[in-house]
Length: 225
Length: 110
Image (cartoon, rainbow over all chains, first blue to last red; front, side, top):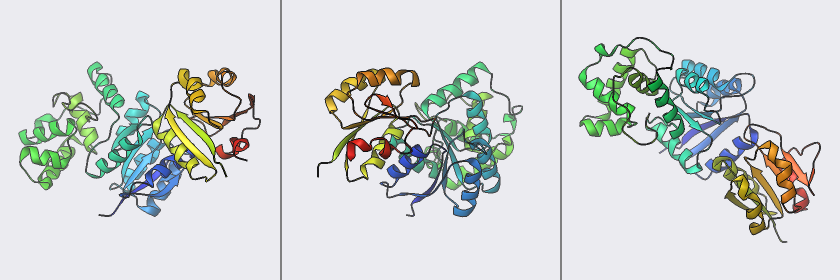
């Protein structure tokens, strides 16, 4: 199987070079490029067509959130995972709304990062446990800015089942196995869910569903969203 | 030729282990890498007895005090939020700061 092609975007040069060095030991992951700001990220995605971008948030010239929004508009198949030192609410929610597939804090163990890169290629949504807790707290406090009125009436019972499993942090394959359907059917359900809720990705769907009470709170312990 | 021993003590595993991996590419260095809380740095350094020390994740306000308590070896502080290094040699801060970690710990490897 071809290695996962990763682009590293971070203005902290030593951090970026260090991750690059660590990833070189992973035979199934290939670092195809590095950049130090959001503008460079957009240009490198166009040139290199990576599978996954590890994106810092606070960078000069163009922030990681702005770059993510542009990348998801122009190259929707590229997966963007935020990798940041910041767990500030504004940046977290802005990153999710920009279309990022995941949000990781830089206090990860290297092995966790490797596994999360592999996971995002399986359709999983990598979220640091501390961030997931913050999201849930915000949902409980009802302080997250609304992305629209609930439209759950449009979802079928099966789609709600799928949505619950997405919110629990399951991959498409896991959902397929639990519901005894093929993975392609899960993808169809997800596509319909996103279309009906007018959202962009499974992370937004999960957070929306919890926010509006469409599903129960996530039942997996970590990386639940 | 004996290799110089460099210890990387870190708060953030991804950053600290990445730095250690980069330093280990230099044949002149023997690199060890340990997680450490600020309050454990001095004790851990006395156990490891490195020729040079790289510290990641210390509060700025603690740097000069920490250097006073450490053996007089080259000490380099790195920060996730900053590209600039803070380096001490013989308990004196290096001004201007070295551009690279290798440059910062050079007295230990020359």
